[in-house]
Length: 117
Image 1: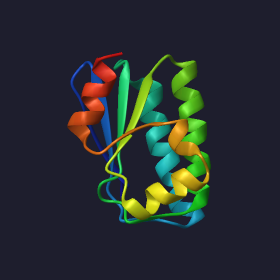
Image 2 (image 1 turned 135 degrees about the vertical axis):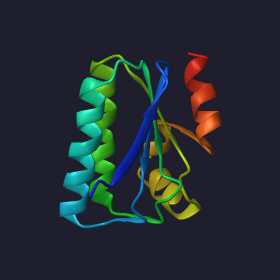
Image 3 (image 1 turned 180 degrees about the vertical axis):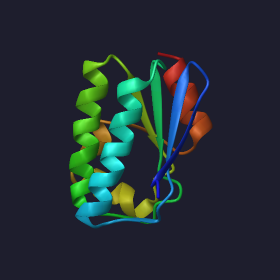
Image 4 (image 1 turned 135 degrees about the horizontal axis):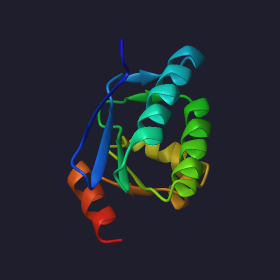
């Protein structure tokens, strides 16, 4: 069973996390592999990660997001995150990752922020 859904339009690849809880190492590994496979094959210059269905996320997932950020930089892909809950956003702020990532409230706003680059 896939833990993500995706769609692309030639400008932006949107990856939506479909699990409400990304907590255990097995799920995190599966999600990371699925997202990395999409990043490896995309021709889109922009990627949005949509967390609107995610209520809980472990700190290990933050590490995977940092790795993904580095990979996107290497591939010259612009990355934005959206749909992050207030509680998860607090973790981003405590770890200062909110300064590393382009975080927007919605897919549309994330998409717009990337297309302006």
